[in-house]
Length: 115
Image (tube, rainbow, N blue to C red; front, side, top):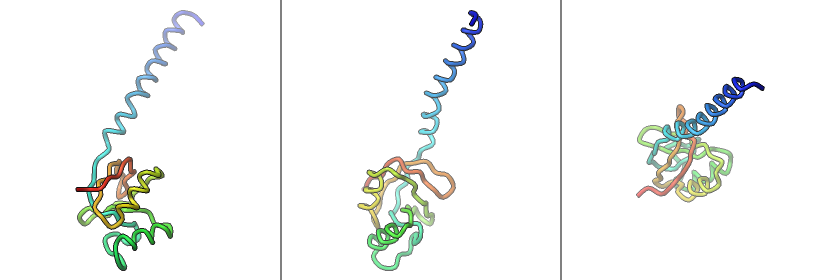
């Protein structure tokens, strides 16, 4: 490999490394915080019985958690065990969810009780 080829390769490698550092921060910037009531995607804002029990029952049968914010119902996507535990604990109650929204789905990065 001659000197010119090495310089080009080094330049490309540097550009890829910089892109790798910048890309995650660009995605993180798209995260927002939402505060609403933890529910399930099947029932949304209207439950058959107590909201917490209904939410847990529907989720145990395969429904996804959801967050009701005003008139809007967002389906919550996460495989993070801590986030799922927090959603279970907050079922039927107010919570603050941080994540990135696409359509009516929020990919959850964190959940905490709303005050």
